[in-house]
Amino acid sequence: MKISYKKLWVLLIEKDITKPQLRKDLNLATGTMSKLNKGEDVALSVLLRICDYLNCDIGDICEAIRIDNK
Image 1 (cartoon, rainbow, N blue to C red):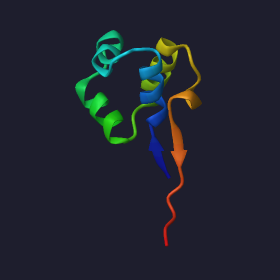
Image 2 (image 1 turned 90 degrees about the vertical axis):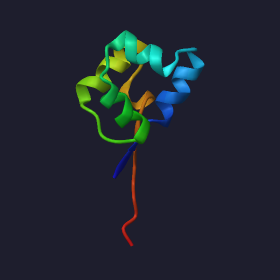
Image 3 (image 1 turned 135 degrees about the vertical axis):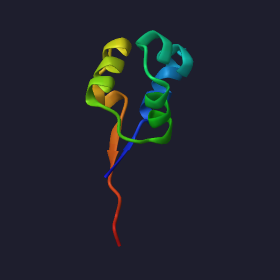
């Protein structure tokens, strides 16, 4: 399984929030933002902080994508 943060980026656009503004407002490390941009795993606590900031559910910012191993 792989994680996708596409929903997060769409939600930020809808709320007119830039990635740098999100990072600054939540005091996220640059490494964490890099992981989000690359679709890598980040701590659940970070995702919950983002949800609290955006007033949404975790399913509104990310989703698990199944990868077929053929």
